[in-house]
Length: 138
Image 1 (cartoon, one colour):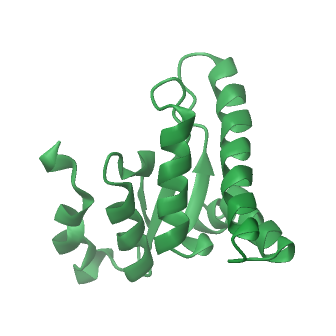
Image 2: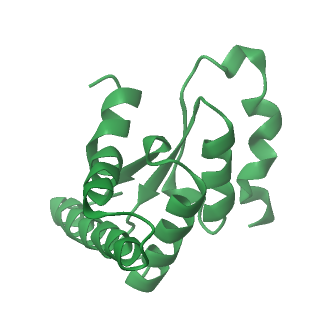
C-alpha cells in the first residue's frame, strides 16, 4: 500500500502540461484519505472523489474519511460517487449509504457549531451535485 500514497503524485500534479486538466483522485485515496483531500485542497485542478464503496468499507470508516475530507478540502473540491459495481443495486445501496454518511457528518458539524443548517445544505449540494457537474461539464 505504500505505493498507493497520493503524495507520490505531486511531481505529476505540478507539471505544467497537466495543470489545465482536472484530475480526480478516486476511491477516496483509501487508506490515504486525508492526504488525498490535502492534494485537492492545495492544487486548483485536483478533485477528491468520496466513493462509498459498499460492501468493502463499513459505515464507521466512511464517516471517518468523510470527516477527514471535509476537514481538509473545500466542498467545491469534493464529489460523491456510489462506486457501484457489478449489479445496479450496488449503485442504489451506495447512494443511500453515501447520503446517510454525508448527512450524519454535516449534522455533527452543526451540533459542534462549526456550520449552520444553511451551510450544511450548501456543502451537501456541492458534494452531491455541483462539483461533479462542474468537473465533468454535465
